[in-house]
Image (cartoon, rainbow over all chains, first blue to last red; front, side, top):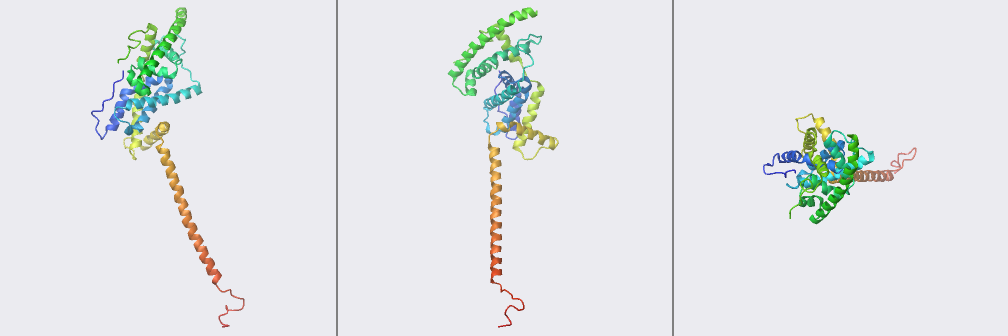
Length: 182
Length: 134
């Protein structure tokens, strides 16, 4: 889970640069993973994350200390939407097909996971990713997504249910293939 | 009210746990972090100071800042287009004012010259304008 930002040591002279540096160092991996799990391709994820941080850098003086993360995530969601639209238009296909079993376990597992997540409605997918993968609390998710806590709980519950069903079916379909491959 | 346990901690099948764990382990390359650090520095410099710092060749920083500004322009609020349109409006008003002043000067001059020509005596051939006849 990503740690919250600390602003105690920021001095007025170079506070902006320190704030930015701290933000990038603490949150880049989180933003990058979030972008990947909500459908940005591996090739586009670096650029999309960079765009989100640059947008924050340009607005840094308007962002209240402590709100950087929420602003960053909402900017990243906009960037992700544009990137997804572009990818769909260009019909970019992930180089690892979800049905193929290969030696790169982590990579293969992530390709399978992304194929599962792709089948969830976006609002369920986002809550599921933030809670189960990024391990944010429901209250923080409610603040980021801009919905009440009860809505987050309901979406999480539905997302888990749908994801569980999809995972069961996928696991069942992979077993004979993997046995055949082995 | 506390959060429910995550699937990885409690309730998820081995398969689901493997997928989620793999996702948690994915990380960006260090180079991507460094590129973003440089880009954010350039962006904040470009937006906060009119002069570029002397640490890098001016053209590289300017090109980078322009690229970043254009990339991120759709994510930034609309204050820059508004500034641009208001300065264009100012330019139009300025030229309209200059045109109006020039028009007044030219038409006044033309009117005065017309008066001068109209009041001048019309000299007849072979005469000195009637001065000697009187």
